[in-house]
Length: 66
Image (cartoon, rainbow, N blue to C red; front, side):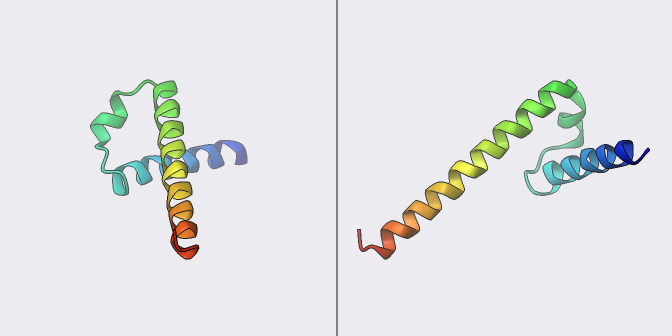
């Protein structure tokens, strides 16, 4: 039972994040096949990680006077 609760909580946290922080609509999310949602979330995570890495590199370059 605890596993189901954790996965259900994680599902709703993901849906909340997509609607609140990334401005997806519930209709858009509801139209996705479950594996499509997993793919889109992974692509979004990859994109955010790339942006963060680029920001860190730009900050390092600025500190080094480039």
